[in-house]
Length: 93
Image (tube, rainbow, N blue to C red):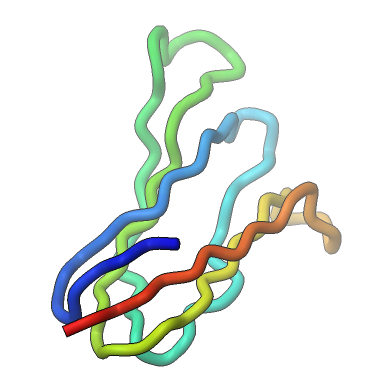
């Protein structure tokens, strides 16, 4: 669970290997949290294929409450996901 204050920005990180075609994406952003952006930071030798790194999702905690963010790991051209994750976010004060 992530604990954050209303009005604060927070991030969620996943290990990723985008050269395989599998990408993490946000599957659900509930009311009270705003998706801002995402970024990928390669680890080590970025020229190595497949490059691994960290896929970071940036959010804003807009209002108080407990919500669940959902993420999926899948290829854009496939209907099914390889992995799915749910992360609880508790927004206080």
